[in-house]
Length: 240
Ligand code: 1GP
Image (cartoon, rainbow, N blue to C red; front, side, top):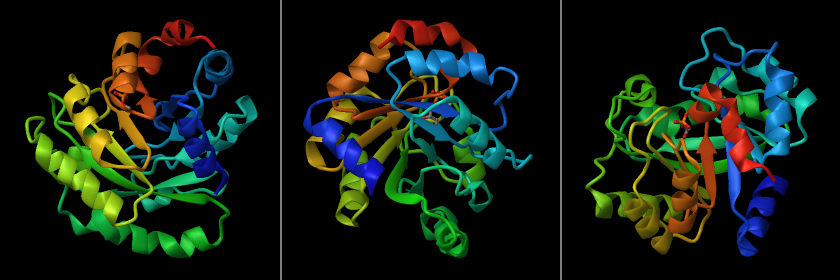
């Protein structure tokens, strides 16, 4: 449980963590060296790899390429069982607890076990909470679930708390990739106040100011994908 232990250690010394999300469907091998030079010079601490879909089954090759480019831990953020590969270091074992689709609550998990048995992946049990972010997201479409309303703060807090009480090791507040509105600071603060496990926040974070305000509100790990895909110079603002 090395990766989880390191996350806990960072939190205990108030160090904030930043995960760069790589979508295997959009990753370009030709661009990899340049992109990862920026990643390696930035404050990024983890790489997440995944997406709601991966029709070309590119995940494994993308992870192999990323491993050549960086020493940061690579954590799978899979939309499906087919995206699991032992070339990564760990796996977010995500249960979509904001929704009521049994497939995404437990179904895919059961079907992943035979595959997981043959890997050394560190499995990180994660309560995944989708929150409305101003537009319909791919997660919503693929999982056929509704996001929680931004105004339903107490319900979101109760959902996070229920996930933690079920033994989930991480809680992930997700506004959806490319969200117009990131998870609000009010939601982050109130969830943080009620759970002891590390809190991940992502979706629609595009500026240093939004990143800082997520941290100040209580996010332990912030996930950013689109902002780096669209403008690699954003890494320059986040130099170590
Ligand atoms: C999506 O939380 C991540 O699953 C990151 O979202 O692409 O909007 O940064 P963005």
